[in-house]
Length: 448
Picture 1 (cartoon, one colour):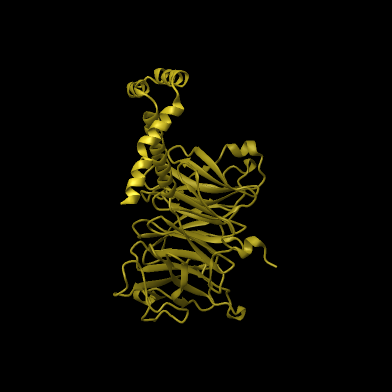
Picture 2 (cartoon, one colour):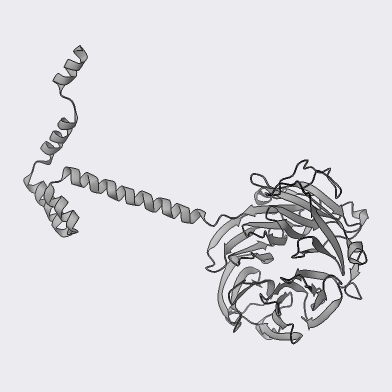
């Protein structure tokens, strides 16, 4: 029987394990995955689904089958039309097209599971397009089918960086898909993530190799494209004090306009986020995301303001990228481990996918706490003003004068003297009687 956490999963089920995700616009996402060989009975597909304000990620509005190849990673070209899909050690190129009469917010008509890549009712369609680029159906990037673990375009879209299961890092030219550069390799583990530096001259990669203190030179690396080699291996000095036996970096990102980068880090089964100074590559800060579970998915939005992490237990957490303050925690977002995460271009919706066949789009509203603080402050000020008005109405002029002068000691003394020398009850009766009509007036009015 499923646990309470599993039953609470809010993801949309798509009938296939999900391993990859990308965004077409702020409201439309791609998710991909499958079961591999046709004998598994689980389809291999790239799906397009729209995010609804009420229900979140909706039914697929279009899709394309990928035969017996299960999609493992997606990389959307910055130009907007093409999506590169990694299948093991090969790459396939697909074109996405938006219907001319689709609404600006991505709304579509005729949404349903019966749509296909040729559906005329869909806002977006997707189909293989290798012929128009002069490419084969599957581009082989490694001679022995070593699996592609991550694929990321640079900002210009002229180059595609690949991280392989073998630990190798390759740069491909677009759209020829020729290998332009082989930078080297993480020797003891697969590449888990790649991030381009803002100026496009370098890469930050993370690896599944164990980066304990006895394994200096492993884990996360900085690469120079000008020199064509690794120029630094990152090391968190606090790992020495922790005496951790299992140290694995998972997730990499650069800030768009500051000298900051982030990596995910699993220390003996605990998930952390580390912030780095990209000039010295020293640690600027660290925050624990998950206490008893490692990070399995990691993403920083394009604005560099929010970090999202998914755990091996299916939970999703979002924190402020600078202050590391918690923003949102979705417990039981998925029934099992998170496999993929991606932020929409606007940076306010995080998409997560899992091998349990579920996809979840979570909207993040970072302004809500600010508005609440402003509201509470306004209420507090109104209460102070109201209480001051009450004091001025019931107490004599010396108190009023003292309050206006800001002499609170004199005001307190005036109040004390008033209670000692005056009959407050009589004054209150006078105020009430002056505000109420006399019995004679009421009798006269009734007679009329």
